[in-house]
Image 1: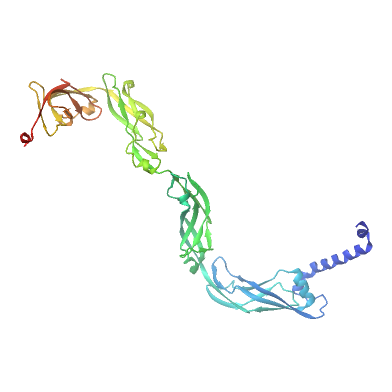
Image 2 (image 1 turned 30 degrees about the vertical axis):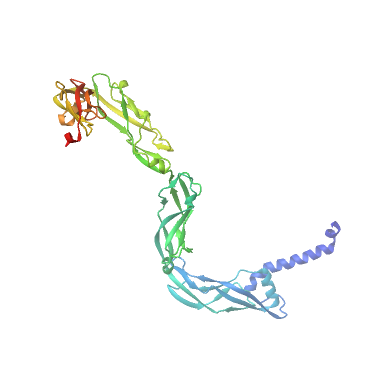
Length: 418
């Protein structure tokens, strides 16, 4: 190999070919407009086949809606020039010039440039038709289509998508713009178990759902889809245990928030109506003044979570006042159909009642606002001493001059009841 490289003939041959290549490279651009400097010998033909037809026009104002797409181009001339053209492939094009044309249909001569001057260029067809339309811009709302919704993680469901921006601008010729039926982004929901946020390319579709390739701005939009478990909003029930220290009363109770959202399987949620439990109880015996207490919200059995996980209960405490009521009647409830119930001789059917509470709750309080009753449900025939029970507005404490009354229950026959 070293002997070959050192051979003077090898160097001469390589130099000859390099000279030819440099000659072609330097002079190929001059072939466009100058007579051939290569030996002509004889003529030949070269077919370039179907070439794309370039349309020169005002792209800012108009859009091409129809045009002659390609033309057949054949070359004729000296074989040497054709040979150089075939291998050098200079830049050339066939085009129509509509830079000064307006909207409408135009039939114009096909022009060409970039071909060597020694070659005859034949273009078929010689004239091309191009239809221009003035460009229009329309605003199209973006819609979101969720695919593979059935593949979302069990127990989760998608919320309402949020798109930003909500509209895109589509610019094209009038007849093209009229084809736009929708602007759509597709979101794959496979395996979703939390919020999805993606930047997605907007696709333009016609009425048949076929894609359209028109200018649009922006080309992508931001899409957020909340994915959550089925949920239900339920009230929170806070109970009170124990009693306030003597002389104190509850003026009001604030629960913030007073409802929570429960997440879980739909069949579990359907059975729930309120959130309650031991964790939602306030021990009044430890309260001496207005106080805010933080309570953990229990997760119902079978549910997945609650939100928020805690609530705040504020008890407004003030000094206790007293209101005296005389001759408050005692009602009897729970009487069986076959029983007659009467107060025994000497047993009270009315009581004197002391009501304790915050002053605002005692104002305008009337006897009709309070129920004092005895429950005889399930009692047999005979004389019974039955405890009094009280019902009235919240945050009040009741004390009667007696805690029981005596009743006589007598069974009746069907004839007696008639």
